[in-house]
Image 1: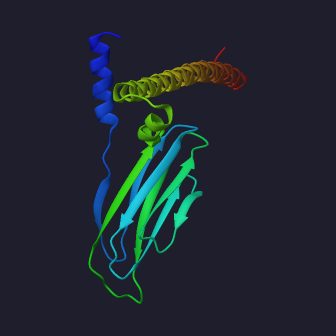
Image 2: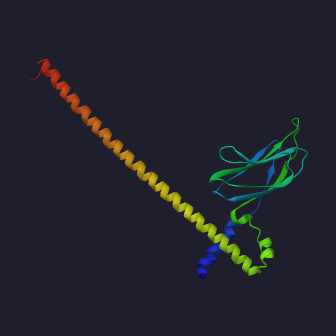
Image 3: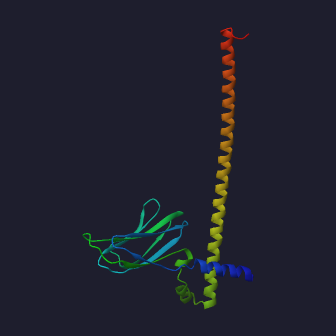
Length: 205
């Protein structure tokens, strides 16, 4: 691997190393985090919700509303699931006030990981007795494989979109030709009909 490709992989590794999200949640409020994730990907999450005397619920759903993980009266915990297809997934934290009592805002910590981010390389290093450089190389290998898979997926999507565009273009062209033939046929029929009509009325010879 040359130095240029190594720099690219390291740069992408830094980009993919997303940090956890912290936000403030108002009393009776609701905030959600959405992300598109590929098929057969392990997704893990960790949350820590500050206690302000109100109930907080954590729910993970897909675009069709199927509940993948749910925890009522949550304060801190974890969730995990494996995606069955490429979809948009949503993690929502809802603060529910009791009897309309307004409570101060609470801080919410949410850390969602998927793909190679879910792998525990420290545990792998202990179990396989790997050196720090070997662990880093294993992580870069997994990252490069993930990038290749993403590129393959995008190429497949591009081919599907191209096939759809070509199919749509062909259908529009054939429909346009059919419409033109119908208009020409209708115009010809109108001319012949009017000519017969005027001849029958002896307005023309």
